Length: 312
Image 1 (cartoon, rainbow, N blue to C red):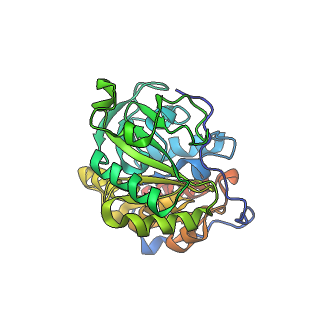
Image 2 (cartoon, rainbow, N blue to C red):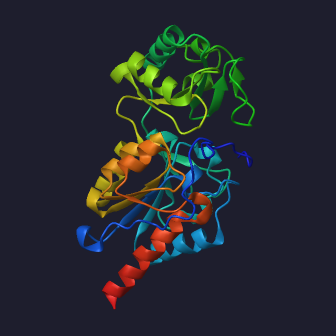
């Protein structure tokens, strides 16, 4: 487990609404919440990657009140130590933008994959080929279940040693030179461009790749995250909720970056953080204060208070 994690920071070009009060969705317009789905970086976590005491207390209060909390993140499973103590009884988190459901019961540094929605190797190779053509200068990394592999020109964005350094085509080859690696499913491909603006690169990549894969981003830099077709935070959360008999209307979701948009649109009630990307604000049904002001906790506290009133 890498303790230092450079998860996405607040974009410099977005003005944080730190002083804005949370905008609630009227209680009469929503059913009783049964599950809270929250992004981590830029949302639940403060910019220093900590979980505040207030947020820890709010998460515990929600679970005690019978509302499950799911962490739904672009992070790989090995970066979940910061919140693994707060998954409570169910022990599950959705990682890799929906590519994996992970059991974190073992605590920091240990995890097991419950569900994997992989990016097929042939599709990943096609993605790399298309982006090399559409955006020359793109460098790639490949996230497998066993760790990160990246090209020599890929910048040190993740502050952890790579499992291997090699061209993406070699990492994704049918025989990458390591039989253990060959058996590890691909969770996502990461693509970085040193010159394009972040949203410009996202638009270009989506046009080049089409429906062959899901393309999103959670970083303020031109770093894209590419998953299997139809794989997103929303679609995997939907699967987890269906297994529990939970409807979208019973879900409250939180996020701040484009990789959260589908989840916020799917959930019956959703909140963009005060520091959120403009497209995220447009997609959410409500807005709370910034991550550094415990915006998730502010809403959870209100949910718990309403639940107690209903039970009294």
